[in-house]
Length: 422
Image (cartoon, rainbow, N blue to C red; front, side):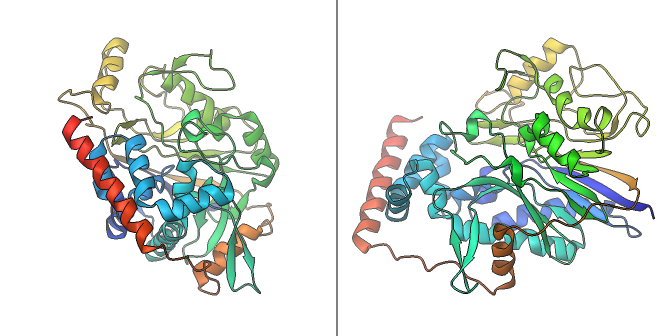
């Protein structure tokens, strides 16, 4: 029996205020499902795929003032001071960096907000939802299944899949981290290649390769060996789209960003084995001092999309079933200059004038032959949390003296920032 379904990729533009409060975050994610609503097919299952790290800026929740500092590095330093009791305890107990300690100290509340928001949206809109991804701990059930335990020091870039009834289908960690995700940046933990699995659903045998993972042969090979037919590539490309890039393991291989992107989803579908389709949504927008840009795409085999087209700065070719236009067309030098004008702190009139978009395509596959994988201890713990049958360990209240000292230090930092500027 043939599976017929609709795939939707949402390309949003984010901004720091979307993460200042729980209400703002829910509204921002809901706006993406609302954008998808007119395109949901009434006669077949729908798959909606959101973008990478759309939960990372939740570190700003409850502290919108930190955005005044202008850079993520300064904001993180100020937040560490304000949240010193909890963050310092994690830093000393789990021997992690300050930036990872800051994220882990607030992980219980932010994880709950992220998961419950995504679950509720999947249920409300009746879709299969790839939530994008967020930095989250790894959990396991303890104390008779009534409480979850967090793996000490672990914080991975995780993508979560929900079904249309709000049921958690599975979780995938990012295996290959970019330099900005490693110790010099937000300091995440790499996932384990051996834990990547394929999830059979009415919208395809889903395999997740978060951003850089979709460029890596070991990840694509493992997903193909598991029978993946639909590759999900949530993305947050932290650079101007028309800039040059050179990433590990071959930093000397410098080329235009769009040329590099042809090595991910497009190659997996046009030159691979089992993967028939790929959905690659990309977030755009300047977030404090960080720049995010790209072109979202839904790719397939050449015969699925014979019309030649491609990313900016690349030659047209078959394989793009749907493709978001970039903000402009023109000569390569003009596009490279425009990419810099759009970037954070450029001061140009077109700064942050990125294009929001949404792509959809009706796809079909033969009946699945992939078995549903056994849930991991982490997935079991998340299901228990969402069902309300397990809880987070009780947080230790901060001493009043510590809290007052932290607030005072942050106030001094803010005053210094206002006096001397950025």
